[in-house]
Image 1 (cartoon, rainbow, N blue to C red):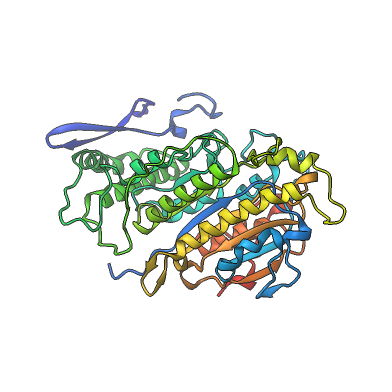
Image 2: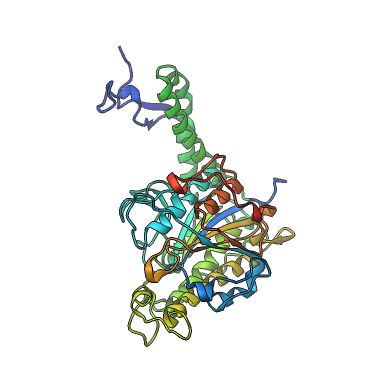
Length: 445
């Protein structure tokens, strides 16, 4: 008779007392149909994402020159100080295949999951940052960090799956407290005292590992694979706990600074959004510099951006649809004004990583930031002619300072390239027309 049941737990001992950890749902608990219960290390390379809403106007966004030393049209003129630290990709396409055009969802979801969503609530799989965090984010205090300048905790572009967004930090003060509050293990502190609560959590996980060998002998091949995955997750957690219990290696560039004192209104005007973006940027950069995380996400706006301009009655999104095209200029001037603010924030973000010295270079030399938007031309919700950026050299694996013609190929090529650079061993990424096994070789060092 089967000695296992759904309530079976792993048991171990901790300081003379029993500890238990529940098991995942295994095939052995199901019926036949499966529908019922029966230190000299190199500098770490980090990965980040960045998001801005509503793309840009081709006439004043897309450079005429490809390759190095590309020109900077009006909408991206603010990128001059960081041009040599970034790559700009234009003329990319996000293919929706047989799925509906979801005006401000399709584009970003495709670029971050490789698959077109079927409706506005559908996230077809984990986003690229989660995939990479599972590869490189298991030994830091935070597997990943997510922040937004919108002032709204609902505005996330990072998902474990359709039902599990990674909520962003939206308050600079709360973000500071989470990063550098009482639980922050300062790598440069004179004294180090392990957290007893962390010690207990790690010991509980360690205590049940002795109960695994016998269990593995009682289950089938699929359950062994599932258990192996489950215990791999537990081991990852133990590594994170171990990191919290080990005195950090001193990091010269780790200087958290003071808690933000400015009380920000949660307004959506461009000035308030810009201030929040700069504050969140400084905190995120320092979190990365202090090795609190190796995967990070930042959003300047939502996809259908609701940023406002003083003295103008319509937000950015509405402006892209209702503002008349200026015939002489060849674009919508107020919509372009909003895009220029987005690009200023992006330039500030990239530049902030160059201010931190790390080794014989800067923090930006050891990161790879994948920046995307939701549409090519917002006025018609186009998914062709899309723009994207890469910033940073990923520890010397990436060449920068280039403008690359996407040649109407899948925007997922950029995500696939990023995953490969970050060590994700996958022969291809994406589904249907978005599936690709082609890296963007022009940027690989």
